[in-house]
Amino acid sequence: MRSIAYAAVCLALPAFAAAGASEAGPATSGRFDPTALRQSAEKGDCDAMFMLGVMYANGRGVAEDDALAADWYRRAADKGDARAMVNLAAMHTSGEGVRRDEDAARRLYQRAAAQGSTRAMTALGARYACGVGTARDDAEAVRWYTKAAEAGDTTAMSLLASMHARGRGVARDAAAGFAWNMKAANAGSPRAMNAVGAAYATANGVALDHETAVAWFTKAAEAGDAEGMANLALAHLDGNGVPADRAKAMHWLRCAAEFDHVASMVMLGDLCSRGGTDTRDFDEAIRWYARAAERGHAGAMTSLGALFADGKGTDPKPAEAVRLFLTAAKAGVPEAMLNLAGMYRDGRGVLPSADEAYFWARNGAKSLGGEMHAPALAFADRIGRSLATDARASLEARSNAWLARARVADSPATAAAGDDAE
Image (cartoon, rainbow, N blue to C red; front, side, top):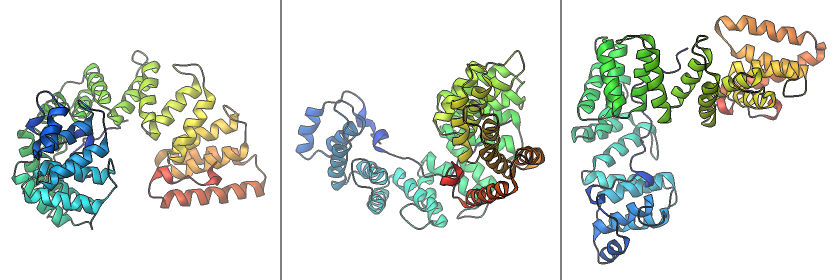
């Protein structure tokens, strides 16, 4: 199973200059002296005001205090400091230190953009692309991304590349998207390096070339991009553009996972638990599945639950397995539903219940497609045969209602929140 696809740049709203990662500029080098900076700020020094905002936002030389950070950013912004405007806008978007106010954030970004801040231009483009604080307007997003990209902002270049590739706000043009990603990559953007590699690996806007893809994934990985690490690992695992090498694949997956790349954690768990007899390591599989599960990955919860249920790499933990299966089942994982049905049928980690076993088995079978659909239906039917006709009909009605909510829910995680799924 391949849980990591070659990844290009997404269109999610970028977290530009949030309070914890503020745009500080060259003045942040050297020692932070809050007393001297405060004295200068009180005399009207705009740079000192901005630096105090950075210090309070990040807890450098002073206790971290978002409210004081916002206050100093506001003072600097009122004097025309575009960096402070960008940071204060980000705080209004996140609600850190100030009330959440998307309209105030938009006005601040517009003021900073008017002064030539490419970060502000990119932020405005992202707000239009995502419909944050304003109606979604792809053409306006492209306009702002283009202004920022032409001024040298590599984040804008990458986002503009995605707009071209997807045909949002501009005619679909994979070649134009590739060109913008290449420009950003040549300007040093690790994320764009990965996107260029992904384009070569999938022939998206450029001719298929696995060897060149690997070269770009390597550049991205060595520059610290987790997606690049994951894609380089896949290349080594599958032997695309480079000789197959499981050890190197595992190395880069571990690197990506240490950068908090959840999909890499899951793949590590899969490789460790499902490898050959000489490569299985259930202890390591449990560690990686657990880390991914802590970050909300329902598939990892399901796999971890299976190891706990079977006592692989640990003593059997059926009650913990049931908890994980239930959480993953409510998040829409059919395999977790079927596993949970088995636990109810056998009374492992939970009181035996043919009713709950049938309910979850039916949910799982109805949610599965492909070649597993028929066997899962047969499994549910075998459990259902032990039930009285009226009881089975009632459970099927309950299952149908649960499945209907699951289909219309905004996300799998909210699909099974009703009381009848308990």
